[in-house]
Image 1 (cartoon, rainbow, N blue to C red):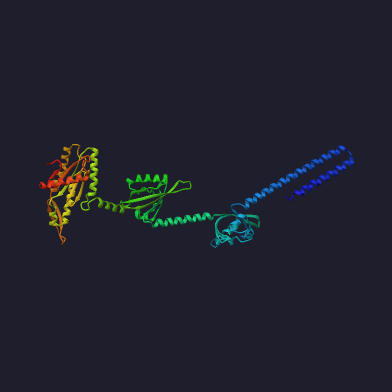
Image 2 (spheres, rainbow, N blue to C red):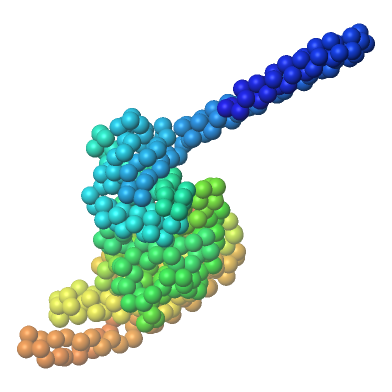
Length: 495
């Protein structure tokens, strides 16, 4: 821009010199033709001068545009730019940089940059800046700065020392606001800490697995199961009972694919070979594209609970003394047998059995001896029937036997049921050895013989209800007693 007027003056001087030359030529030669030529040349020079002037205008406009673009890029950049002197004073700063500090540019120039560095980072900044100045290269670091409003911001500083003259250099600094990233990192750390605190204090077990089932994290509670060991990176399915492993692996694959956790119960193998029953539910964590990255599995050892449930179940459905099914289970089994008889067309049978003269044993030796007899009698009856049959304690010294799937022929079914009934009668009649313990802890063996009266009724196709079948079998049992005990009576068959 400064050379343009000089160049224009030169062109003007050249034009004036040419005019003087034309005038001299006119006086000398007086030739009209030469005058015309000189005028033409003067016009050409004038055009050239105008063209050069236009070029200068365009160059000036381009330079102005470039300068404005540079200012826009520098001033309005999303990154703050500043220039520091070797002593750390702010020599230049763009608009974005000034906004980071919360001050006008005029309030920042010639101020020491270290005055804005947080107290915790001040010594680290001093060492960092001295290193950049001393080595004359570049450096990157993160610092906390105090804004004019006293709020703290986190900045990443990219510094570059530039030498302009042998004894004069500056440090250019690009400042990027990373406060949001730092806050996110802190929240993530806080969440991770909270997760670990929760995981380490849970009674259950927390495992974080990758999409292939490899362990990434195990809560400390796993040491109660596996003992002290580093299980990170191991296959999480190896401790699962072989009979349950494929089912658990399939459920895990479905969770990874669908993102929906499943509630599972399976057996867990301990290093000593013992088995615990685990109940687990998984949840997934996704990556940035929505793909399952981790599976978080929370498990509980439910072995004791399952054992308690089994005990409650047995108390509800089984006789506490003989461990045989009780009346509630008997009703269900009889209903199933009668429904099966209707479907198959095969007869079933129900036996009602009562121990003869049981009261006299209790009166003579007490209930402890009577209970021993009931336990042994129940076991003997069970040994006489098939696995598909049911032996239940009905109450007191009464037992009920349900036989299923006999035969489609009534006569053949009566014979088959009679064989089993006779086997039971004969087995019950064998001698019993019962142990009696006195108050002084001495033991005495009581030898006892017992017989049973058995009433039998056959059923098929729900011709009677469960209650009717039981009632008729009970009637048949009393008829067996009336005949002298230690016998069998078939309702509707015997006279």
